[in-house]
Length: 320
Image 1 (cartoon, rainbow, N blue to C red):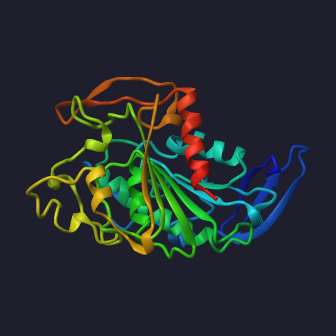
Image 2: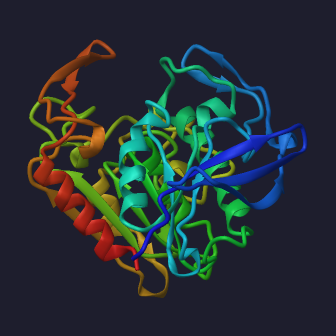
Image 3: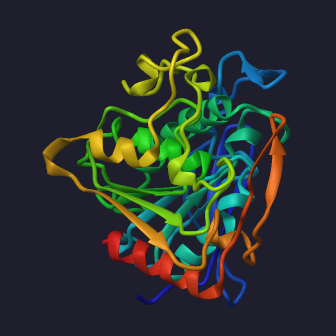
């Protein structure tokens, strides 16, 4: 697919912004003006591991937003990237790769959108911010004339992967073609009881991030007391397994895959990638552990070049 080598910038004013394409020859062209949406921004605060207060939606004029469209955008799928616990940088490298491959892309930092600095935050509250901002971003971008509104996909990494699994139960399938979840965890707001679009779950075979010694990420099953029910999220196992109903443990991701209801016979495929740990595009493969909550857990990250190639091949077969 022929591509326009471009960088999309946001020209920001108080109420009006415009997407600007910067071509190789340095010429610029404004595609379409759009309204900034400062009314979407809220000011929650952090108390310990919690985020307190109303959460932000999506403002396209936030400085972290990158919306890049291909020259042949009418025939190019759009991938919305949802980052993990480390912020936008978690998904930046793979999103750049999506664009090089000919996809239009949208990426942003949901924590920055909420005015929350990086630090120790419980998974559930990270996922709450990610879910609200990502859904609002989806509603914004599907109104954009530059994209094919019937070929939108979500990609999520880590906490973002858990979020896109919830989105698979929330969005009209006529507007969302599928979700790609790389290395999700059941710990946070939980997983939904049903999915309404095709789902591709991807794990690196070496991914043990957050898992007890000897276990892998897809085997994680944490205490229900770590789960928070989020009103915006769809019905899921958090209804019965949460901090107010704290007996027992979450299902593992693989147990959830077996039990989730599939509307319209949508698929939930799970793929394991050789030579990859957590977040293959994070960087070079690094095998390690970390002390978390007083206990040792796996903390292996990155992947080999070959694993990243395999990951991209799996995604390009899914995104059509």
